[in-house]
Amino acid sequence: MLLPIPIRLDGKVYDVVDIKQPTARDVANARMEVDRGDAHLAMMEWAIGCVREIQTLTGEAISELKDIRRAMRVCPYQSAIIISAYGRVEMTKDDGIESSSKCPKCGRKNIFSQRDIDGEIVDRRDHLKSLGVIYVQNAEPFDFPLEYPITIIRETKDGRDDLEVQSITMNWPTLADCSKGYASAKAEPAFAENYTYANALVSVNGEEVSASFKATYGRLIFDKMLASDVMRLSDKMLSVGIESNVTRVCEHCGDSWDEQVNVMGFFASGLRGK
Image (cartoon, rainbow, N blue to C red; front, side, top):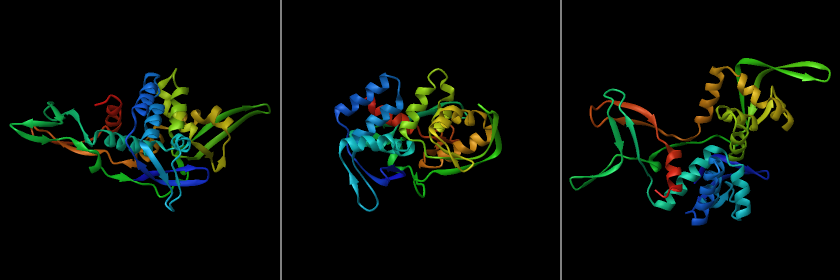
């Protein structure tokens, strides 16, 4: 399976993954991380158990568990979702995604499930394999110019040194970035995404930033970013991976609307054994 965002490891780019069914131990490891409150480490443990082999487009492969574990730490989040979801399909042999939603017109609840109606099986579920996937051109960091530059106030031993942030360059956030970001935001979970983005920061105004800069000013950049730029960045993140937008039709009044399929919920149901 081709990954939406390749994995960069040891100077190589891995684009293809061979999915397998996880073992009971893999499921237990993932559930243990859920119990500890770290959904991203849970996804990492699950994904490790779902990967048989990772390959470059030229056929170079890694299959040792220790190497797959290292690869999953630096696996972009969008690619980890698709690995996790397809691993769940390997386990259950069913790609149907059950859901329910309220019709915006008549207000009645619609259940999108597989049901036996008068002896006939009616399947209104979404199916993972029918959802499209959007791929990036390469795994390189991407540039993001700010429409509204911001100013970061830095205090140095020589006095105040203001930095006007006009553009940033980021890696696609990895599972490790996400886990670290959410751990940093335990006391203020609303800022978890900003901490995650700070971990993925590569450069500011074309100049590479240090780990110390990211720790001190990284989150502040995303805190001060104006809402319109934050929305553009969010759209950028959502522009790659599983195309989860679907059109619903109300079974009661016939009205239609668009909404997102909960692919994360589909993966999580595998941890619950459903």
